[in-house]
Length: 419
Ligand code: AMP
Image (cartoon, rainbow, N blue to C red; front, side, top):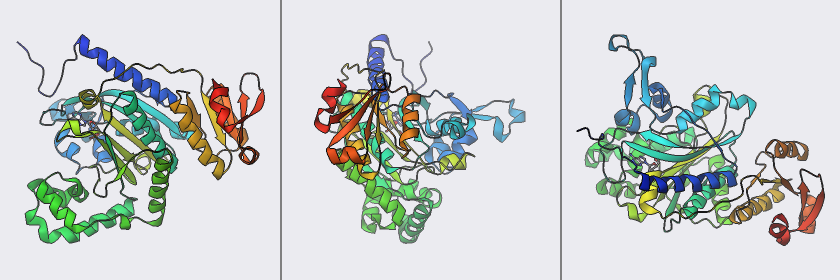
């Protein structure tokens, strides 16, 4: 009798209902935040992952499912395919290959689907597992990092998951990362023999990963190094501060975790991880961060990007999803004009989403005219404009896109008016 491969799972009908619920709740939240689905192939050229994740990353070193696409006598670098171990590299490849960088520019995408890693199976660690992920590509605005983390916490709220922790750090730009790596090299050189065998290898190939090694002895050595945020350059420091302020203003609780690094080459700037105590040793429900150099690295334009993924199996260990169906076709588009208006706009955006009103905003600081055009392209039903006049009067201008009618609404009456 055949048995399934270790580390894979059959999802029988009763359990599949829970999967459907998780997916439905996720799609509803994605439409609230105006993220659109992308589906990429399960197999890609293996070199895409080597290049994106890094030759020295654990996934590329040990966990890739490789497939020869040609007879074994005829194998070239291009004829080795890999089952995708994660979604970011494929989405980045697709963004470039389909010229989204040239046509659409800034995109907000999500995906739900299987990923494959040749790992030693255990509770919460499978060889075929499933991600719910998002990628916002085309901007370096810190507000987008905040939106992504707010989206992650909204998903957890919908899945009725509580008691989770959001840990956040900034790795800085490529230059900052190198400085940190060089410093670590210097500091750890004399303690190499005390590190665990994995970290002795990481010292040569992926030094930063030593920072978040789970081994007690390694953690103690790292703790004594006293690594702080001070290696960040002024721009990265400012970006990190903006993200923290944005999270504070949305009342999202987080923990600064200076040793959080993530093991992949493409990460730069903000990285974060969401953990839950019910998961035991493998406690990450999801993780993500910025990868501002990847699109260019893969042959596209110089485009900032940020994303994250939750593991569905781990969500299901932790959650008890309940049904909620928000309205998908009533997008409200907020157009803030100027810095102060933007702050208000972001708060309003958050309030509306909490009220299950699907909405989005202009993150690109467009002129009123081109932001209106964008609202039209997005098929928004209503537009809320916050300009200098509106700020002075404590109102917003509500425009009905179908009739063209406009009226001023007091700040505290917006939600009632929209209903
Ligand atoms: P990563 O791409 O490694 O940052 O993973 C993001 C999330 O996917 C993790 O927080 C887990 O929830 C989930 N995940 C990663 N690897 C596995 C695995 N082998 N089995 C089950 N879930 C996984």
